[in-house]
Image (cartoon, rainbow, N blue to C red; front, side, top):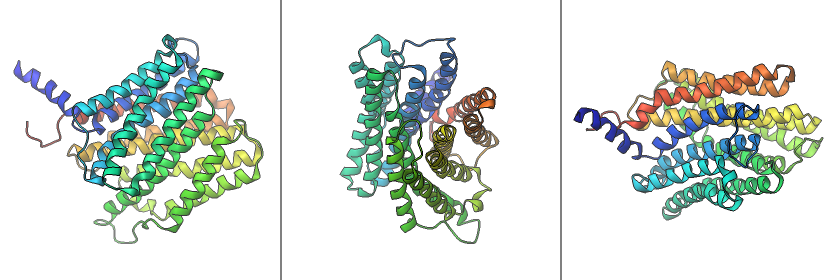
Length: 401
């Protein structure tokens, strides 16, 4: 009997020894459940006691449920190494995780309470995360990472705007767009650091030849142009109209981010999927810029929808799963190489992203491609939970029991 009890105790205690553990595992389960619930709800087969319409709930739980969970898991693990501060664990981590769970329940059951209470419960987690991460960055005088705080703060402001829009207009539009813009900028900032760094770490002992370029002028220009392009896009009319200035800014941002990524030599890291997936995820960022630029050049609604899903399903899906798999393996004592199951996770998300983009661009295939996108997305996150759940629940490999 003691042998049956001990692993469970270890699993529970290990779950809250690092921020990546609860937020990666339950973030993945939430990502799968979010889509699995949304489709039958949207089709009228089931209903949630939520004041949010199905589409607004779906976008809210991706942008303000799933994404902040993964951002929290990453930053609660990375910021201590950036600042030399003690990582959050134990009761403080449990409290933060409970706030995230409370926010998910508040949105799902929002018709049972007032809009103000729902908004307060929902916003408690991102504000608490901002306080925890901000405390460590400011205390360490780590000015380099203040822009990460700005990204989290922008995401919280966008979430507040969504709550106002749903309460006032029964839909969410500009809050969602500003959230997508904030997340794309976070990917550009954090991805611009980790993708070339991980590529260099993999190439240096294995492949003689050029290494990814360090941060330079082209990176700064790409970030600045991308920021203003996203700001203009987020505030533009929901239905795209021909706007040569905004279109030009978006197209230039796309080209700059492509050129930026080319300097990281993605083709040289194809042998290691843990690195390749990060390059693939980042590639959806310039693709989204180019599609959005085309949409605002021509007024094409299909391209506008495709751009959003290039950034969300492709950019967010691949980059987050790439970080989740790599960080989990590294911080639990596993080798930094992708298993066949891990490669399957990546291929499923690529399939989901491409199918969702095709669904937007080719309306006659919408039912089939949307079904494929949803099924592939759900399968990817369930497979992550199946393969990586034991790593996240149990002690680090080789740790004393």
